[in-house]
Image (cartoon, rainbow, N blue to C red; front, side, top):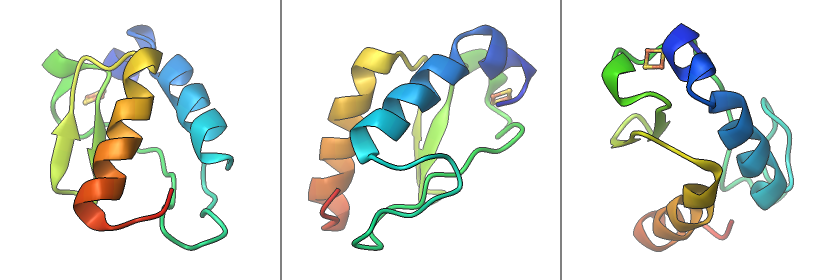
Length: 82
Ligand code: FES
């Protein structure tokens, strides 16, 4: 939610994540698989808006339409049931 991500649509991406996960920012899914958090900046502003998963994978130039695929990829690679 840093400046670069904010001006390039981070709020819309966050809203879509909240919708798809069924939780709000700062909350954890009922099965404890996913916690959705926001941060100020991850240092990759040129790729804004950006999201990370477990501080390992980084997704850049996000749009709301990419959220479903990211959740599916996270589910398959990390064995989560989101
Ligand atoms: S503001 Fe998002 S990576 Fe810097």
